[in-house]
Image 1 (cartoon, rainbow, N blue to C red):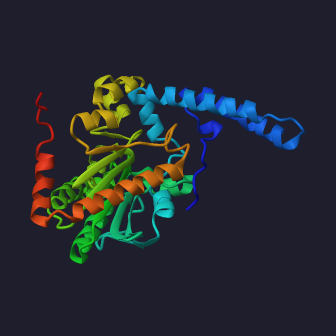
Image 2: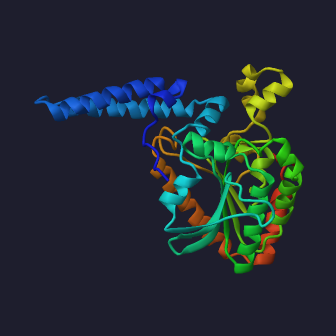
Image 3: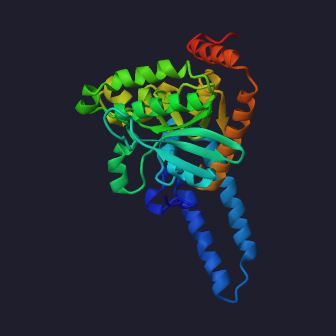
Length: 327
């Protein structure tokens, strides 16, 4: 696994980030001059860095829902593989669903992180073109969800907590996936995750699309990174259905209320995990550290709750969703 770049590349830059990218380029040029000549430019560099911090904070506090969707899809945003590499002390991948095959779009394995041991399940998108194609860009087949469920049952037997990383545009929509029971596999996971007698933590690290996300998304605590999204359908899919045009995706993103702040306000997630200034793609390690800290806090908290009470809380948590908020 290759650690992502600390800064987005120019070709991958988002439209609203271009002024920030231009300013970063100027800072880099001054740093080269400062080290390669007799000029003393430290004060100018510090001024520009402070200006960059202010502009980045201003830009990212005013992002539209559609712009946040694009941040969630950024090519340099840390993926499940990066969390495995940078967050865990040890990881042993587990393969196959014991029925059909091993879906690379979902990774499962035994993880060690400090004093905590747990089962990790996550959507895998891949970094290179070859890997992305092999992983169907994070769109899992039914065997992926069956693999996840089979490993969850194993974790329950061993009394290991479960942590899931959600990052998918949706389940794979092909004919083969439907023939092998895509809807049934996802529905089975949703049903059985309610009854797992171990703590379950779910975190949306990028895209949280439709049933493809819910297939590993039923947990005692559900969190989202600040610039991730979680929705019944992608903005493009919604726009195609309602307006017959992908050009309406920004309007669809607004209507879907899919941002982390919207979902926290509606009670659909438990916490929004703040990202480093300018998004997780600008500081992957900082983002990973924050996710790690939240996972540790939740695992410690859930370990203190008696299992019958935990199962009851999990059930009531999702039953309350969709009920109008009082006040």
